[in-house]
Amino acid sequence: MKKSEYTTWRHLLSSTRASEIAETAMILPLFFMIFMAVFWFGQAFRIYGTLTHATRLGAEAAVAPACTTCAAGTAAANAQAAVYNALAAAHLDKSDLVAWGGASPKWTSPALCICGSPTSSCKAAVSCDGSVANVCVQENVQLSFPSQGGMGTCGISVSARYKLPYHFPIPLTTLDLGNVLLPGQAQMRQETQ
Image (tube, rainbow, N blue to C red):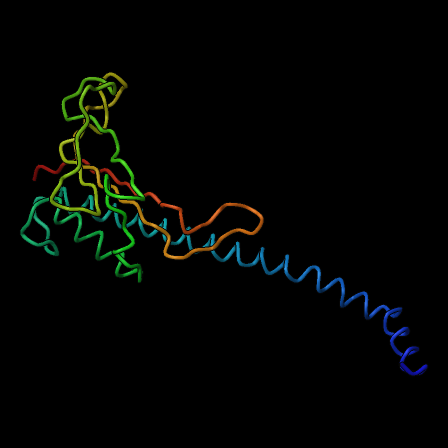
């Protein structure tokens, strides 16, 4: 190496510009990781809000005695169709809904009491309607209990779980956001019109 090249490199290494470049090289990956974490958390929160809204629409379609947008089917079929339509409107794939009680990943339906139960410590829970696979529709469930100050209201519960469609392993941990099941559940009072 020539003496002029040596002094040029020595001058660059001792200047403040070189330290600024080194500091930027150390901070930029950390900033990028934080930015990506905020972005993916925002996506997960959007999907959670959509799923909550979809289950509420499903519960409304299930309890309505007459629905202009529903097929002339059962309450479970109407609820499932409403959930699917809400997911499609948000550009979410209905195939990422996880079947209740199915293969891995698996989730269990909420333990809700049959209508007419005097207390929340009921002996038998209402099972999901078996005619739909990805949405748990529990009909004739107790929503409030007279022993706890409620009116003893009966209704329908609609539940669903959504598997996040992306994998984002968090560095230096065993966490992977692709293994997260987001819950959605809504309950509605039974209509008698």
